[in-house]
Every structure is written in C-alpha cells, then in structure tokens.
Length: 293
Length: 333
Image (spheres, rainbow over the protein chains, first blue to last red):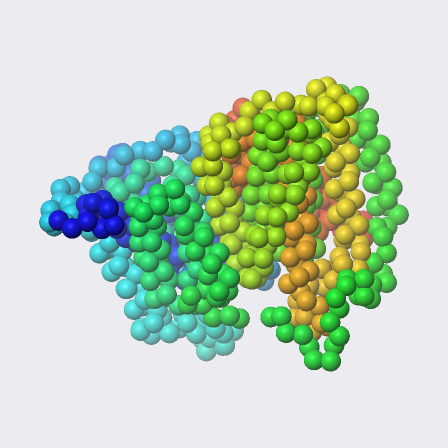
C-alpha cells in the first residue's frame, strides 16, 4: 500500500468518491439552473426546494405506499416537474417583461413557502431512506459501496443525455434558437411560450431527479435544498452559464476539489468553493466557460 | 467595461457632475414634514405604550433595510448577502465590548469599520458581475462568512456571544436603562438615515441613479462606474454593520442567526414590502415585518411560510411596496 502525503489511501479515495458524489449533484443542479436561465432569464431560487421535494417524494412513496426507489426515480421527477409547470403558468410567466430580479425574488419566496411547509410537516431533523443497492466491493485500494458508484455513473449519464438533447437534436436546436432570439423563433411558427413552460418543467424535474438520487445517500430533511443551492450558485458563477459541458465539468471538478480539501485541510472544506469563486471572479469575471455579454 | 469614451473628460470628483435640476432638489416639502413628524413621533413613542426594546429592534432593522435600499433602490444592485455585514459587525462589537471592555460607541464604531473593510473586499469582487450574477455572488460570499463565523473561535460557534454587558456610553452615561439605550439607538438611526438621504440627493447620488437607469450611457459620459458602485457598496455595508453592531449591544447577544442567508432574505423582504427606491419604504417595511414576527412568534415554521407568501404577493401584485404605492396614488414620487 502506498501513502499519499501521509494520508492513508482508504481515506483519500473515500473522500475522492464523496467529492465525486457531491460533484454529481452540483452538476445536475447547475445544469437545470443553466437550462432554465438560458430560456427564461430567471435564476430559479426554488431549485433547492424542488430538489428537496424530490428527495421527500421518494421518501413518502417508500414510507407511506411502499413504492420502491426505482419506481420513484421515474414517478417523482415527473410529478415535481408538473408542479414546476403549474408554477410557471400561474406565476413566473407574468414576470418575464420585468427586471430579472423579480423572478429571483419570486422564486426565493416560493422556496421559503415550500421549505416552511415541509418543516412544519416533518420537523427539521433528517429522515433515513433505505439504500436500494446495499453492499459494495473492495477494489483493493478502497471499498466501493455499489450505490455510491451508481450515483456517479447515473448522474453522468443524465448530464450527457441532457447535453446530447440540447446540442445534437432538432428539439435542442429549437431550444438554442429560442434562447438567442425568441421573437424570431416564434415568427417561424414554434410555440415559444409552451416551450418555455416545458423547459422550466424539465429543469425542475432534473432537480427532483437529483433529489431522489440523494435520498439514500444523505438524510432527507427540509433544509437539504437551501444548504445546497447556495453552493450551486457559486458553482454556476464559477462555470458561467454559457456552456452545458462546462456546467457538468465545473460541477464534478468542484465536488472533487471540495472532497480533497476535506482530506488535506478539513477546516476549509465548507468555504473552498466560495474562495475559488472569488478567485475566478478576479481573474475571469465571466466564469470559466462563460461569455462576457 | 471600464472604457471611457474618447474625448470625454474623466470626472475624478463626484462634485464635477452637473446635477439634474429637478431631481437634485432636496426631498419635497412633504418629505421634510413627514420626516419631522416621524422624528417627533419616535421621540415620544416609548411614552405612548410602545416597548423600547421592540422600537429598538425596529430601528436597527430599519437602518439595515435603508442601507440595503441604497444599493437596490438607487444603484439597482440586488445584494443577497447583506447579512454578512450585519451579522459579522454584531460579532465584532459584542466581542469588543464584552472581552476588551470597550464602551458602546467604540464597539459600534469598530463594527462599522470592520463592515466597511468587508464591504470593500466583497464589493470589489461582486461588482465584477451584473444583475442576477451580482445577487448570486453576494449570497455565496455571505455564506462563506457564515461558515467562518461558525468555525472561528471568537464567535462562540452555535452559542454566539452571550451576555454582552451594557457599558456606560462614553464611560459616562448609563445604558442599562432601556429608555436611555433607546435614545442612543434612535440617534444612531437618525445619523445613518440622514447620511443615506444626503448621499441620495448629492451629485454622487445622481450619478448612482444614472447608473441604475442606463449604465452604458453613464460609462460613455465618462463616469468610472465601477468606482461609484464600489463606493456605494462600501457605504451600504458600513451602515448595515452599524445596524448589526447596535443590535448586538441592544440585545446583548451576537449569534449565527444574524449571518444566515435567511437574514439576507429578510432585509430584502423588508425593503420590498416598504418600497424599493423610496426614502421611507425600508423603515415602514422593517416595522411591518418585525411586528409580524412578534405576532407570529408562537407559530414556529409558519413564519417562514408567511414570509414566503408575502414575497410572492408583493412581487406579483404590489411591486412598488407600501410607500411606493401610496406615493403613486398621491401622484408623486
């Protein structure tokens, strides 16, 4: 067995894996934020709450109805995405002609409502969720729990599928065109308002999917989303929202950096992403993959 | 971004800016009358059945909201991290008074100075991005300060700094009495409020408004926009710090609550409810939200829900806020 700067390899690779898992959630959430922002010009502050709704959705299905994880992985994102569609139709739609800040304030208020309701119902302590793939394998240099490996692979697949849809399909080309010039795309006969609604629903569903994935890995608690969303904002600022692949790369990369910080300098592990954000803003204000407008 | 239009002399001093005649006039006569009524009312409020502690809380948050409003209402910058100045300055003043034995005025001054330095650092990072990104950057920076406060030894972690003594003002005047403390807080609030008022109505304030209305135009006129934004940010941070430092001495407590993102959201809510970009709006908003929290204190998590609903209702229906709506009804701003 080799030693890495005095750190036992088990701890090193263990934290690396945890970092990758965190990075998977950063990537999925920042991807959803970027897709929504691209078309709606709204920073979706409710994203964290919708991620939490995803986790609680899976928890409720399992605890109350006995519906297993794999079904929840399909049902919950659809259901939460539908609530997103309703929110867009009822509220967000009426703010597009105003300053973008109002969209942020509205979604912030919605996040408070949702988090408050869940806290009222479930208290602020975490609920456990049974691991759907128990067990693991010893890779020689570290122990790999199957579910953790599953999170990394599955989220990577989801991210790449999203990238493929947006960058390589006809539907994606409509989406990108509407991001640039919605008026022109509408003039060509595409129903842009419906596209906006569905895009918001999709972004929300992506957040809920991340939530379902997170349920067995973390404790399911009402404030799990608000704690995460601020870090994701920093990730978005670092990556810039210009590129899909950039968001994915930044998410995973920062998760790994955070995990490694836990090994080498644990005191800074909570703040390292914010420090990186400050440095990136000093050197490259538009973000690593962003375009300065 | 910083490009100056060729041929346009760069104005180094804000005083060179030609003031717009109509808007630069000091607040209208009604404003002055309202202000006088407000001051007299606040002088006698403790004798009219209002608890001094409640009034002090309102005044501290009113100053905090006014400081926040200076950015959103007059420069168009939405800071979603103002709790970092409010909360950290509270820790600084509580520590200075409790551990170092400083007098209240020095403690508050220390809080303000530290907040100013933080504002300079956070501001120079945040103004590199505009609009929505500015909000996200300030929020992230505030979260960083939150974690620092959580871990730093001098803040007392989850316990905070408790039982901060109320030492005599200037070493002479006893502040253990709530009524004396109230007049100190009122004086601090009025100084802060007048500072903001003077800033808004100065040529410097006119430039800030021009940045809010049309930043490229302000740049093309030769204003170094970033410097104006930074100065406004530092001023706002300082006053938010003074408010937090004062609150810590009033309640003899500095805790993590004041550094959380929820606190940053609360000051946004107060300003939004009262009316962004109005002089009295933040004061009204602070009074409304603090009273509401007092009434709903027993309802636990519902406070969060109610606050969220107020956000939604105000954003959807009353974007001008209470004061802005009244002013619009009366046909003036």
